[in-house]
Amino acid sequence: MNYSISLSGWILALGASLLGAACGGSVVEEAATGASSGAGGDASSSSSAATTATGTGGNGQGGQGTSSSATTGTGGAEPGSVTPKLEGADLWVNCFPVVGPDPVLGSFTATYTNNGTSPSSATITSAKLTFVSAPNTLSWPLTVSPASGGSVQPGATLSVKHQKLTAKDGVPEGSPCNFCDSTVTLTVTWDLGGGETAIDTLPAEKVGCVY
Image (cartoon, rainbow, N blue to C red; front, side, top):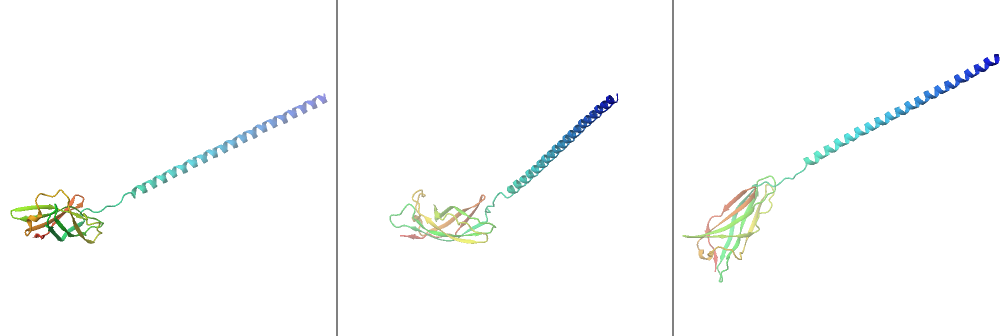
């Protein structure tokens, strides 16, 4: 009987030991599982931080685009800032036989003053001589070179000699040689830009003819 009691006690003790080991293993496994879940939470937090940093970078790029747009564009010349003025003419009529279709020779001089704040220019659009011997008149177009006073700096004045070019055809009917010893007037028109024009005329002078 005593032997039986001792054996039963040993079996009970062994069972209790095994049960305790089993319970302890479960606790350890749950703890490990919790730790793993905690690590997963940290990874999620890191991902969120990376997303925030990316958004900030996007805002920075947008700011650069605005700055580039603000600096686009360049300035231009001021229309009408140049004042052209005729200073004198040295024009005559070549009436040597045989008289050509365009017997007018010579040049005229003009000054160009820039009263603006940026470089500008004036371009000749029309130049003509008006011959008068009452009751007759003759308007004679001139083609000259250069056709512009060139670029004039702010506050500067340029003096330019415009040379008369000989026309080969397309001249008016009549001849300046029919107005020798009469009077002639030079009128020039300029394009100043921006739809503005300027006109200047020299006083009438005696027609100079060469025979």
